[in-house]
Length: 212
Image (cartoon, rainbow, N blue to C red; front, top):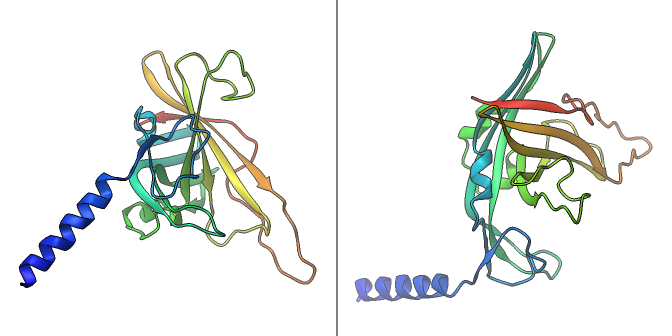
């Protein structure tokens, strides 16, 4: 009887999963609106960004590890929808003039219940569009860019967050990423509170990382 019950539960589970609508992650105006939907990287755009990437300049180094995570569950909040999504997660290291400022690379080996706990996560995809030059700024035909969130341990500005952009391109047969991080949101500094707002990675600075 126990075996039959187990099989019944598994059958129902598979049936429910099979009914989950699979929708494209890229260029979807209804992204996140359909409860139970799976917003999939149907064009495999994230595959370009996976791997180890590194910028070096003398004793300075910026290294990023990126990995694609499939069917991550996003729980509804404030009356919204719950859904599944493909996304990129990552960790990074920044060394300036021989001094290591931050290194979260070991966290890449941690399996979080919520992948967004990684210090780099997200996955808004944009591509070259001759009619809308403000989208995917700097992109050439065939290139793709992702917009992710970057965190630094023990650093936080209330009301703000860091957005980091990665543009994938190939130059002379070498795979590269152009990256730039920006402060977004509405930063605030509450009176009487101590706030550590010294991010290690220079903001509004462009780096070119090469695939290792």
